Length: 67
Image (cartoon, rainbow, N blue to C red; front, side, top):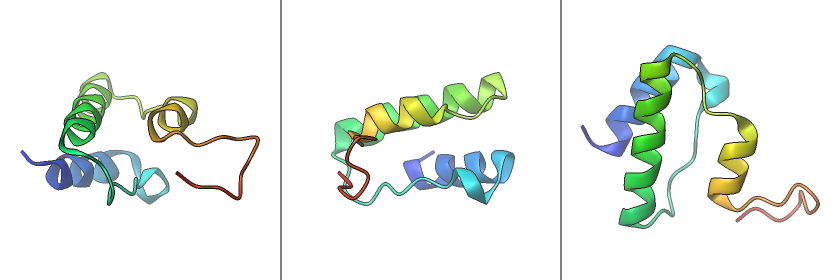
């Protein structure tokens, strides 16, 4: 499956509030995120927000700057 199919399955399982924007990921980062999504689906637990923030480089101390 490609990333969009896996992401669709993830959203179907955990709901729209867990949608993830992946528009600017490198191929390597897409593969890493795909692996995270598949592991999450298999374990039946959504990816923790902190783990996603770390993955995307979001700094909670600078909420106006999205990376």
